[in-house]
Amino acid sequence: MKVFVTGVSGQLGHDVMAELVKRGYTAIGSDRSGASDEFNVVALDITDRENVEKTLEKIHPDAIIHCAAWTNVDGAEDPKVQPVVEKVNVEGTKNLAEMAKKLNSKMAYISTDYVFDGKGDEPWKPDDKNFAPQNFYGKTKLGGELAVSELLDKYFIVRIAWVFGKNGKNFVDTMLKVGKTHPEVRVVNDQIGTPTYCPDLARLLVDMIETEKYGFYHATNEGGFISWADFTKEIFNQAGIDSKVIPVSTTEYEKIAGKTVAKRPSNSRLDKSKLKEKGFSPLPTWQDALSRYLKEK
Image (cartoon, rainbow, N blue to C red; front, side, top):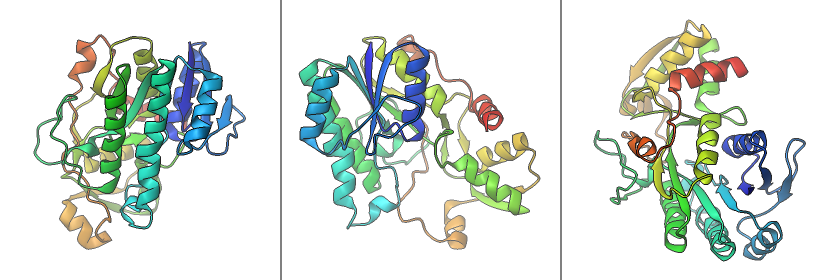
């Protein structure tokens, strides 16, 4: 199987490429620079429709795993930047979906819990349609979902949350740095979800494209729903850091640190039961994922 992967310079794209190579598939990656000492990578701007068409016609992949995206959630709230965010997350996705249709390729699109309104305390189900994104990033990711689902039949739309991995900045690294330099750390306890570890998600995505079990899915690590404060406590515990975690509400935190530009969801719970129903192996617990991440670092 020949697989085309976008965004290979990012956390997830890198690990998807590694998983494909590990399984012996022909993996061709892309990012804007096309530079990689590790993988077979081509330079591609996914917003350039003509270039996307030429590149994919030449490669003619059996599947596309679309990991590239504008992910600076706060930056996306800048009206001057929003046309670029929309171009990348919506138009770029549409360009890839159109080629997937033309080439009869499978397509996996990585989305987010931000497509929902983030309210309540019930886990969001994969096939829920009550979309109400509360920030611009979420709106554009929903736009990408619609481009894929309306154009294609052979698609996997996989929503994730709280991503961390080795190949980029993430919450775990931030907390490790802060914990080593501060005797106590205030972290919000009223935003609830579950972390997603990139190597585990990469394994699942490759599992998916090996099948024809198309549709919407939710995929985060197992281990139960937690707050960011709970996650920080476990990070410090596993890393042997003595800094004290003080749980605070989002409102309290914003009084101390300032209000975030983009609105964050209080409910990032994702119902992942469909994975088992369709025969996919769930991701390991987030506690186990964190342990492996710290050892690999």
